[in-house]
Length: 219
Image 1 (cartoon, rainbow, N blue to C red):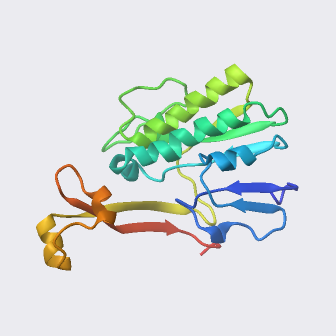
Image 2 (cartoon, rainbow, N blue to C red):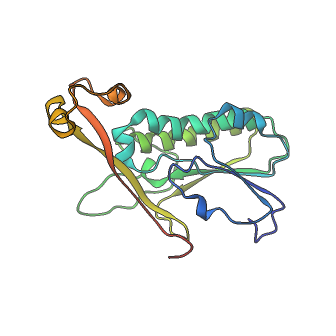
């Protein structure tokens, strides 16, 4: 955008699946570290916007299966709240929604089969909250286009590569019984700040494992 002569770019990102080092060091760039679902951020937006690139995502099918609520917060809700805010911005020329090929592609094993780019969606294809939320985003894009004339276009990304790309991200829990926790820490009970991570089965889900794979400045 900057190379094409954009006068000003405002990036809003909670860095859930990105790194701040990839934000260009340019006086034309304003960076806000927050989610687009943040009401304070949304209320600060003004109508002097020409283009919107809606790239929010909760990275990875595995992460969405583990935590569907977080997927909803960072995939589905981001789209709805953003569109509700900008639907009256008359200056906007285009809103680009980043969809996903997995939302419409048939899941195959052994042999790959092509999926035509149509609006026909099978309920059986969506096998994770991530793929479901991505197709919901397309539904919202169509709705706001028809209902409010918001100039949305949908891009179904499948395999994307480029400098600064986050290649993958995820986290997973180490599950501990109370007895294992006692033996490991010498503490007789789960401390208060960990009780929200204790499941209905009484086991502690300690998120001590995670990874983020990315390229940084081309390396």
